[in-house]
Length: 147
Ligand code: HEC
Image (cartoon, rainbow, N blue to C red; front, side, top):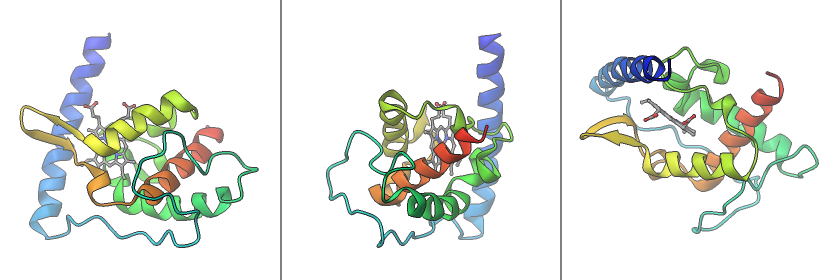
C-alpha cells in the first residue's frame, strides 16, 4: 500500500515535471514576487517556527491574505488550487500546524525535492522571502483548520 502510494506520487511528480517544463518553455518560470511589507520582518536567519501562527497573532490575518495569493501563484500549479491537492504533489494541509510540521516545511522549501538530478520541486526559498514562505504556511494552516 505504502509502496503503491510512493509510485503514484512519483508518477504524479513526473507529470508535474513535464507540465512545469511546458511552463518554462513559455518563459513563465520566475516565481511571482510577494509584497510582505506589512508583516513583521524576520531578517536573514530562518526562524524555526511559524512566526504568524495563531488567530491571536497580530500578523495572522494579513499573513493569510498575503499567503493565499502567494500560494496560488507559486505553489498551486503542483500542490493544487486553494491548497487542495489534485494528486500531483502532497496535500500541504496534511502537515501538522506545529514545530515538527514547520521543520519539515522549512526543509522542503529550502531544499526542494531533487532526486537523481530531477527537480520534483524547486528550492522555493531561492525565489521567495522567508516572510512570504511563512505567509504561505499560515494560509495553508487556515485551510487545514477548515478541513
Ligand atoms: C514544480 C512543482 C512544485 C512546486 C511549484 C512546489 N512544489 Fe512543493 N512539492 C512538490 C513535490 C513533487 C513534492 C513531493 C516531494 C517528495 O516527496 O519527494 C513537494 C513537497 C512539498 C512539501 C513536503 C510535503 C510533505 O507532505 O512531505 C512541502 C512543505 C512543499 N512541497 C511546499 C511547497 C510550497 C510552499 C511551494 C510554493 C512556495 C511549493 N511546494 C511549490 C512539487 C512542487
